[in-house]
Amino acid sequence: MRKWNFYTAKELAPRGWLERQLRIQAAGLSGNLHKIWPDVRDSAWIGGKREGWERVPYWLDGFIPLAYLLRDEEMIAAVKKYVNAILAAQEPDGWICPCPKNKRARYDTWAVQLISKTLTVYYECSGDERVPKALFNALKNYYDLLKSGEIRLFGWGKYRWFETFIALNFLYDTYREDWIKDLARILKQQGYDYNNAIPAWKKPSHVWLRKTHIVNIAMMLKSEAVSCELLDDNYTNKAEKLRAILDKYNGAAFEGFTGDEVLSGLDPTRGTELCAVVEQMYSYEHLFAYTGENKWAERLETIAFNALPATLSEDMWTHQYVQMVNQIACQKTMLMAPFSTNGPQAHLFGLEPNFGCCTANFNQGWPKFALSAFMHKDNAILSAVMLPCELRENGVTIRLDTEYPFKNQAKYTVDAERAFTLEVRIPSFAKNLKIDGKPAKTENAVFEIAPGHTEIEIAFETAPEFKARPHGLAALKMGSLLFSVPIAYEKKQREYVRRGVERKYPYCDYQLIPLSPWNYAFTGADFEVSRNEVGEIPFSQARLPVTIRADLRRIDWGLKFPYRSVCRKTPKSTAPISPAEPVTLIPYGCAKLRMTEMPVLGEE
Image (cartoon, rainbow, N blue to C red; front, side, top):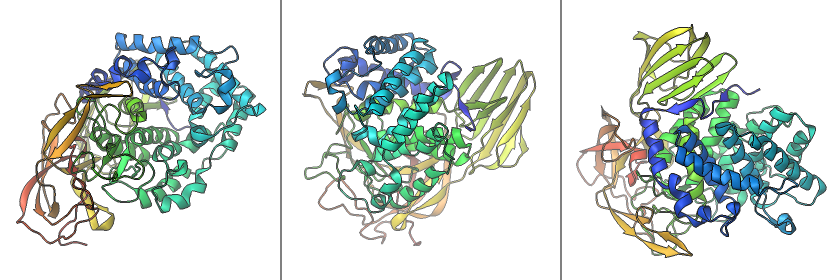
């Protein structure tokens, strides 16, 4: 049984730095994609002639919770325009995708799985009573077609079969019909079993395969958690076993994996696709909700506070297709790309660098993370991730004021008409925990809340520490934040039109050309931490919320042959070529160009 349940955007409202981050997203690409990008603006999903497969459902999957979390009426109206068009075009037999009947057998039904999930998200946000019946008809049609053999899973649908279970679980809770369980079994039978992919994960290659595709893998991690109950299977902790293998052979410092676009090993100059970042976050959200195991929430916030902001421009009008942990430049390479199967522009910031899936899909990252702040079960409410927000539900209001992860204080203000249990997840790295000023044990804090007004203050400390990385390198971490050497850069802007898609300011392409040294190594472990106010742009390089000052030395690091803008996987030499100098390291998520994994001189 699921340990915790999610709240919806009707019950949660972001506050503080989280609200500012979501408003930046709404003012940027997410909130304007339907106005400027033909694949959403003129999509076949709403009667147009552009793409009629994954891009509108992907975009809506994030745009819907963003609109409802911000209570933005203009955005909500745009949501309804798209949903109304999708529901109005649903065929009498239930088929819901923009595909003629005679082409269904050749249509990759990943789109059916995705739009079903998206409509479930919409129903949770809006309560639109048309949706359950539309979902029932769509998935009953999907069942009939699969059962009869008229269609089969292939392509992306075969490798993402478990995504359907977001909608299937909702349908079964609502209707309790046997065909829903039968459809669940068919999907698993025709879907790909990732246990068969493990040998390929251990030896990453440059061959494009769906079984090593980083986004498929990020989605897959939640597969057992979301499907086991409907399949009447026991939960076997499959995600932890597979994640450990993936981390051993392809792990990145931010708790994700390299994948550009397939798994790419342990080289910190290889890329990680943005779609994989947000999908891995979504998997960890569901894994934590299902298991209640704190490790999933801790891994979630490490990805969210580092990998997500790092690969987005501060105004959120542009993004990278892939980010690099050691990223000394974002310049188009003159020769072949330094990635597995991505092109030489995949790490530029732009409207749709390399490919447009991330343009549509990145939108879910921050809104769904916000929806993971509080969870509930029976008469208990859990503060799962310390995010500034307000919860209002069933006679209870909880306001959480915090600047975590930049500062380690949180104040809970509770006004309740009923008694309930409030549980607060305390990170494992918290030191010197205090509750209302008194020392406490570093474990989940549990409070029995009586009707009336209650205030709870929680504070703890975090200390910088090295995280060992492969090849004799280390990353500096404090709490859930990674820290990097920032590299100053010149931004080179390019506006153009390609295949009918216009790139113009602020959603044009940008190359970032380095202007400052990057060839550093750590020298010892003496650190000076400075904490500042969190600015209007939470992950800003100009107004940093927290910094760590450390002594570093320059070394002969060298460039990766034959590139002029990619550093080597490991230094050519660790012999110092400069005296120690104080360098201010900044949060990984604030640094667009950065060195993160570096040797510690004098240590193996």
